[in-house]
Image (cartoon, rainbow, N blue to C red; front, side):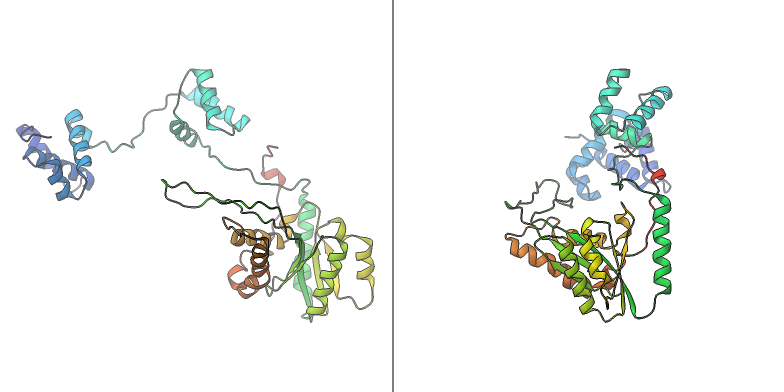
Length: 352
């Protein structure tokens, strides 16, 4: 309990002057008001109700004033403190972290304790690393064997094709996907005091899909097969030809062996074929927009989504790919694009 009358005349005068100062921060003037009211004999509960705070907050203000006076009221708890490492030690820490790229903050703390005998809490280590210009992030996955010139040549060739082809020609991107009947756990916002989980399925059933997408219309062709191979590829190409009125269909595919099989070449060489096959450079999945479609499918269908049966899972995957995307192409077209770019290996530090 706070007893009134604890302020001297000078202290009361200084606090009243602070409370009336129009240039002072409002949160500081509120604290000054609270101390004045407590001195007048108000209880912490009464002051809290008047200022729209809780009584524990008012008590903490009183304790701060009791300990450090007006200076205590001016401390808002985030002013920080000087670094416990000198400039030379900070430079050594920056060099060590830059060289080692430690995966755990605990490793950084252990190194500091061993090297300089300085112990930091976990939160203090994170603040220190941020202050030194570091952040915790996951490396990007980079295809092996990237070549700048090959990527640039592919992009130029594609742009030239798109800009010069006739009105009776179309471009499609083809690939295979194998979504597995499993929930993919991903991060989400949730109440901090509630543990969350996803329930895993017991099976490992998966769909084998040979698919294609037209970026102009958003039209997709999704063929479910027992096994992705040259035969399923030919069947997909046949369906595309029969369902597309265009005279020529430029089909871009990666260099999987079944795309380059002899029976595929023989089929393409037959008279009357509409399909013209274009092989993408090796190790360049970023140059095939259908890869983005697979990622979008997982985000909308499998991330934190549980399907009790494989048939339900199968239905939702195919519904998204065959119906949802084409019907809502204006919504998805900015996320599945041919806005290609060269990935320069020199722009990255490859850690593994």
